[in-house]
Image (cartoon, rainbow, N blue to C red):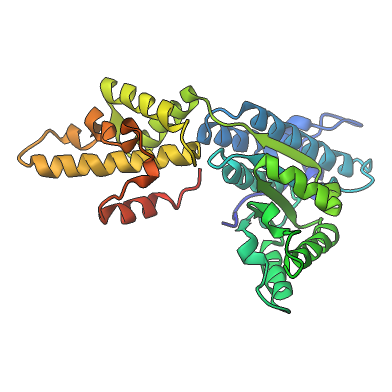
Length: 332
């Protein structure tokens, strides 16, 4: 996921940027050189809603750009703290925003490569003495030059288990966050209700986090917008009736356990595509080409959700495994 062919904004490169005159700095030229607006537009196009998050990303980008300009002018005393915390429920765009944040950091010269490494407890914590340190250091070395995104970070710490090796991973992580902060940004992510006790139990981590971003759940209207966007990207479409039925489906699904925002929308579309394929094959004969793209209301109403069941209880036919696996590569 490393970026290539992207010009970084560094104090040296800014010296060659257009100047507004003696004793002045051309902020607009630096902004254009860093392609910040372009990256933020990509984020707007890629993610529905999340206005508070997008505003905060704009603010952080502005801070980083101004810090570069201050450094050029000899005003900056020390580099800004860049480690972050992303809190919110599954499927609210945390990984996608982390990818864009890595791109912004790279373009502004705060990290060398701008890649994103995603890790969980299993990637960092060993199962026996002497196993944790090499595992943790291996992941951290992969992330140097970019961003390390630790999902469900609170699982690193298990206070109830005295023989757990998670604390060792945290101590190594703290060392890297401090000693390599000029070329490594760590983002800790997870449920807000679990992240707060995690930080309270690990004040060293909390003190190194400069930016806390809370990702809200999507509204019903935003979820429908996401569904239509996903369908268009896959060259499917709702008709008027199926669009209404899918909205009804979402209104019910939101109330069920394990609802995961955009991730659940994607899974529901996968199931609808599956049912559409079965319907078309069973129908046989000649059909208009447009029918290959149209999702019918019946493709959605067959969901267990309309009969009071949980969507996860469905057992799709074997073809669904490949269908879902191919789409799951795109994180929402």
